[in-house]
Image (cartoon, rainbow over all chains, first blue to last red; front, side, top):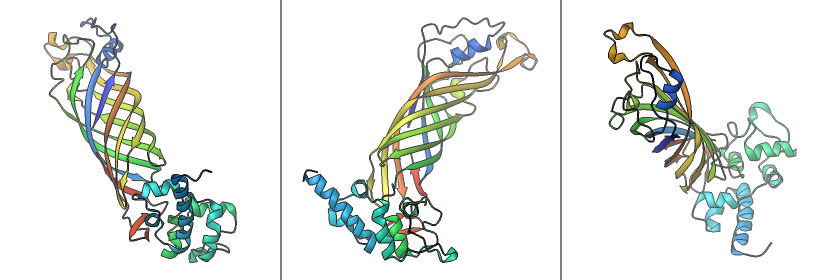
Length: 47
Length: 282
């Protein structure tokens, strides 16, 4: 089980022109402040 | 050195460990340690210590090719026996000589590598509000993820790891501008600590956490798709982004050391230094 988070900033507000999307701004906003969990199982080797 | 209980036991471990190299005896049980890891912590064996043991087992002389006999006549080659760094550590040795290799100070919990697969869940967002453009399914969608890890544990209890996670088609962060669900990947450098217990089959509960980067890659519509009668006619662009992130997690690794090339010691088995061991980790 693992918890992930990305940082966010007060300046991360939606100010997109939907008639001409700024890809860089959109990506920055989309990655801002996201939180999610992951649950994994796997196989490991050690040496 | 003060004669504390710990120091006396540590010295006893060394001496008993050396005796074990000669006779494949049961030093851990004699020293009274319950677990393999504690015994290994104090069982310090130098290359010089192994020379008489190697000599007793007929490991002096020169390499003899297919016969598998190892030269222990020099410091460096004796070190190879001790650390398992040489190619001639185990494969061609009879069991009595392999025991010399496996009872050295080789760290049973050094490097490790793993692959894993699982799911993402519980996605949410903090700070800003993308409700104008974001589909509201961030809390009830899961998607598959997979990845890999490589790490090193010093003395089997603390170390570092690198985690790479890949989540293709992450539906949990859908957005009306996405032509397809994005790929969300993460690359984390963590500190890890484990609390091992067990012997031949050991268990390593662990916790790790650290910092790194979260990346997003997707194809998006460059204009609002809700205003277009035909989505196929809309212009698209591939976007890539990276943002600082952190993670914390834990689980348990269950190791089986009952691998094929192992040397019997006191009714249990220990792996030869170069033999990888298997773990199921959660």
